[in-house]
Image 1 (cartoon, rainbow, N blue to C red):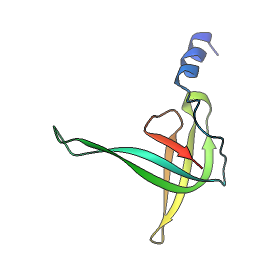
Image 2: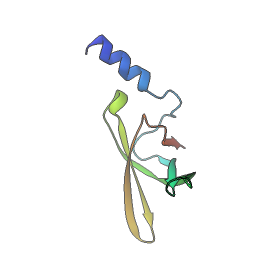
Image 3: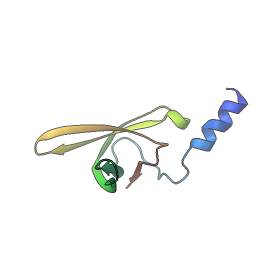
Length: 89
């Protein structure tokens, strides 16, 4: 890999993520924006479930979390580098 690209990828990596793998139960705090115009509010919403997969590496890494809510399975894919989501065990 090109050294410039490697430096760019390393700069985008998050160092504060805990170690987790498929099968672990995690709580991901997702930052949501509500409202429009001047009345924009931000809040954190917890999404708790089981990690079913991890894909990619470096700045393109993603993980999929599945939870069952009211009898319906919900899966969400999160990127590891985004500041909008952070898994915690």
